[in-house]
Image (cartoon, rainbow, N blue to C red; front, side, top):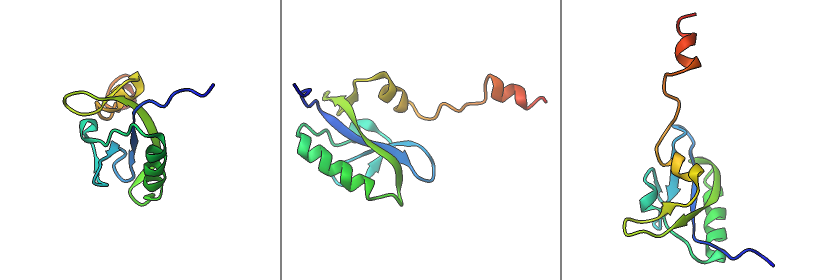
Length: 102
């Protein structure tokens, strides 16, 4: 039996900056997941994903991510997506910091 469709958002990475971005209802890319279009219809979600993938001059790696509605807009349901909402994780620490002293 197929798994029931759950609400989704279209997400990708901004081509030039690499930041996580989400597709809004008005076809803009936002760095704020709470402004993303939350889709509850599977066919509509697949269509929006195809439209996003056609914008390869703006983004890379578009996919559908699980989300849940909240009073402030869509929120992630998986830790990977929650992590992506916090921005880049390539701060100067650990091995990166130690390599500067070599």
